[in-house]
Length: 394
Ligand code: HEM
Image 1 (spheres, rainbow, N blue to C red):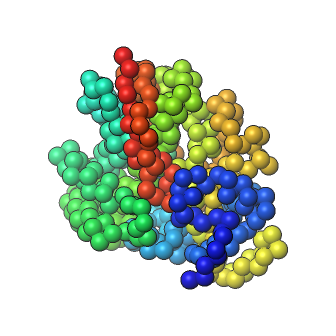
Image 2: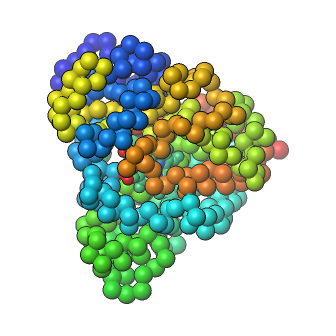
């Protein structure tokens, strides 16, 4: 491994974990294609470069994984995020209908009931950690119900999912425990799908998978990657968005009134601006399939390139005063949900959870403020909070 004693940017450094935005600014202005020697990856930081790169999946492939180091392809077979067409498109079609905007509305009641239940658990307390008790639990509880996990198994699967995905500082890859939990969860998910083969399919994602396997469009082993991707994508990212809003409320950066314009919850415009300002997934990678020249540098095939969505979202060529959170701004061109064939399947669900979740929180706790220091989520990709200690004011 080559070391650069003073890198402009290192995606896994402590500095990037705390606040990557100053480095992104330097990258965009001085090194729009930057070689991070320590990881032998190239960083793309300007909005247009990222957008065009993501659209050109034939050159910038996902098939060799979208992460760094031993996190690459942790989910295994079936994870569409780490597949190119044609397999990507076939499997995406198994999932996509359930997550369409028009179909996702039927989950509003599940999200609302889950949010109310979680809030009820701490409503009478004076102090609560809104990250561990709310922003982390709402997305995973919701996605597990949509997958089709029986009510009686929600507790242990939620704990196992949270633990499997946690990345303690300093760990450069999944822990042995994460692999054990993955094996336990996958065996359970596969048994739920197998149980429906050839019979009546349940009205959930596992039912859709059983039907696809019976119809010959999906293999049983692909249940692993497709489900783990949904667990991870459906949880960490939305947790981060909710946490960023809760944090902004708790520090007084925004008011409850500003966040409650759409049926008591944040409007689409407000959600977009939060996503633009602090993208939950800061970056994901691609690997070149051929020689590509960008900004006068020629990359050989097999070069790993980081697409830094969060930096594109702060590109002054696209957004005025990009380092300011302006709730009235039209931030809808943000790259937080990606671009092209891998564009986020769960966007409508993430928006629903945020509108309903924050709306419910604000109506039950109109006044709260942070006590102590919030702790950032231990991940080099996901930017969010693991702990948000809060005082509830009555
Ligand atoms: C605020 C919340 C969310 C954000 C910021 C987010 C972000 C993203 C991004 C950036 C990608 C593109 C990945 C790439 O290009 O390699 C993506 C893909 C994906 N997301 Fe989300 N996501 C969110 C919520 C969700 C939810 C709730 C689900 C659950 C259904 C979900 C499921 C997926 C899936 C399955 C993919 C892979 C799509 C493909 O490869 O074709 N996401 N997401």
